[in-house]
Length: 172
Image 1 (spheres, rainbow, N blue to C red):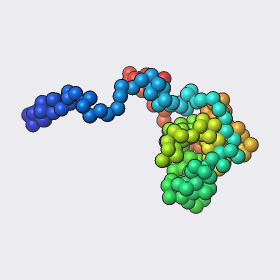
Image 2: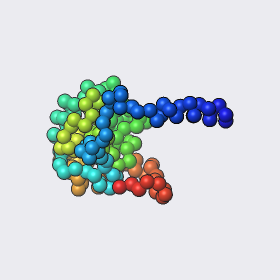
Image 3: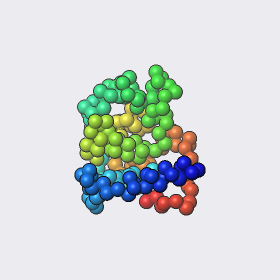
Image 4: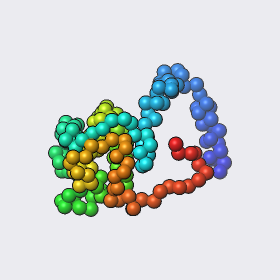
């Protein structure tokens, strides 16, 4: 206990040090925060305007995703996105993801790997449409938007338990 207390006391000047001399970063502005405050809830809250079709999504997928995830959503160097008999048992969008809105949110924030956040909202809707279609969760002629995306029932939804704890920070 004494060693921990001594180490904490010794570290306090470092923690309280003026870091402006490093010239790193800046205080977050309202615009900075708005640019990253883009979370999408399972019920669709937070989905932006826009829409996407399977056909458009297929074109975007071939340009932006195929090199990492394979031409058809599996078989690339990174995770398979499409459930097939060849990858049975692997966690894919069709076998593991609980909400279609999570697919949209993840693509929007994290993909492509080397340029996260670079896709337009329409491209993200289109990619989501294509991937849900490839996982046999929607028909080819479906157009997804903020009103329709959250209504899709994902097969793995029942495998997840909603976090309904109270007392912490409110979820918006």
